[in-house]
Length: 388
Picture 1 (tube, rainbow, N blue to C red):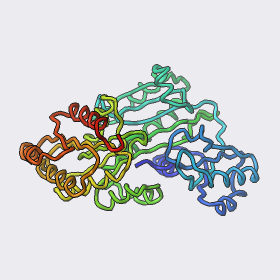
Picture 2: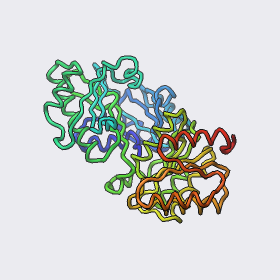
Picture 3: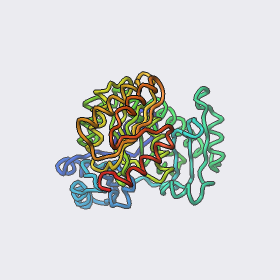
Picture 4: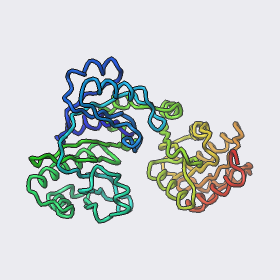
């Protein structure tokens, strides 16, 4: 679950990370009400969950109440990258001397938390990583040990910080950001830019926080944030029935049904390795029955972008024969015009495979490995996927 900037900053402040003073407005009437209470110059930021907001015109500046009203009113009527702007964050313009980048995420290859810091903040960090990889300091943290002082020393030293005041401010922000990331079960906690002021203190001028959907049951305090986030019809339908629907890539064409975020990520990776793109995924969770599996498949295939479907299950609590039964039930009831590739591992695998093979349903094939499944689902799409 991605949070809006103003929501992430609310959490940042709770962990002691300084942010600029600001106001959130959600209508022209609320905008008018704060015109006289804002400190000028002010930054006007559209609250959307898409990247490249600044380049799309979603960040503006105003020196007077008249300019703020004009810019704010226009933004509240705008649509940025297909997302309607329903809220603005109005913040004081911070007089920065430098702009840094600071983030905490999970390094899936190393299976360790990773803190990243760069003095090239305020920029497209993916471009910095691609063109100047040495400009980003990276420090891994052993989760059994937790974040220690030497990690922070290593980070700021590798990042080339010498000023004691700045170094102290960055280390304090990094420690707080790591704690927030860890305690929120976040996939990503990011500050870009982390502004450095003339006295050496630092301020989070922007904030990004993405919480692992699978861990949301542990965070009822985030429920109020979810209610303010945009949600598609399929996301609502899936959530209402106990599934997690994920809109992955509008340009993709493969749908994925799996159990667990790790397995879904593996499916996405393998399909990408074979030259394809996943457009959406549905997490069945644990213990799904045949009826529930059929229900999940039906929800995912309501997305017209899905041209072929990969079902990859690791059977633990969920039994592979129940998965196979769900696939057969879904296909027999709906006759989807979409080829389906199924890959099963774990509990009752042999029974599940036998059910699928005996049924001999057109358009349903079985793969032995995830790599083979990714290859087959893309080949099937070329030969007979929806819209092929």
